[in-house]
Amino acid sequence: MPPLTRNRAGQGDMPTGLMALYYAQRASAGLQIVEGAQIGGEAAACPGTPGIYNAQQVAAWRRVTDAVHARGGVALVFLQL
Ligand SMILES: Cc1cc2nc3c(=O)[nH]c(=O)nc-3n(C[C@H](O)[C@H](O)[C@H](O)COP(=O)(O)O)c2cc1C
Image (cartoon, rainbow, N blue to C red; front, side, top):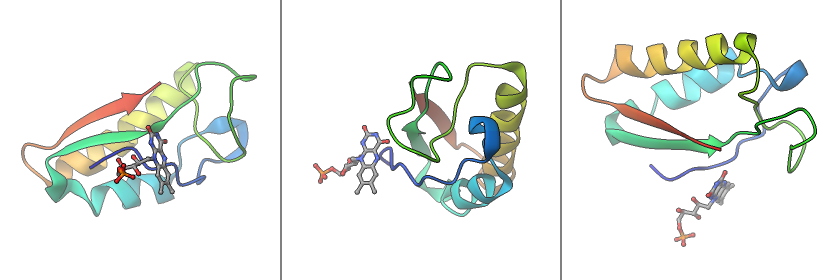
């Protein structure tokens, strides 16, 4: 599955439960290149995109990957920076 920005991040550029659901529903793709994520608070290309520049965001991304792995045995998830 190619990277598709969905603008569903929450306050503080946090990955959300809605994102976990979205990617889990597509776990059968086997390989997902997850949407572009910013590497700093001033690096967003547009509103609602997720970040991966602090520990809370990393933990939230882990909930996304856990949801994907719970649905599809061999699903690989790569994050686009
Ligand atoms: C709504 C939408 C969001 C997208 N977000 C990203 C993105 O975050 N990163 C990226 O590299 N490409 C992004 N793309 C490009 C898609 O990955 C690309 O359209 C897909 O790989 C199919 O390739 P094609 O459009 O050349 O057929 C996006 C495309 C759409 C339609």
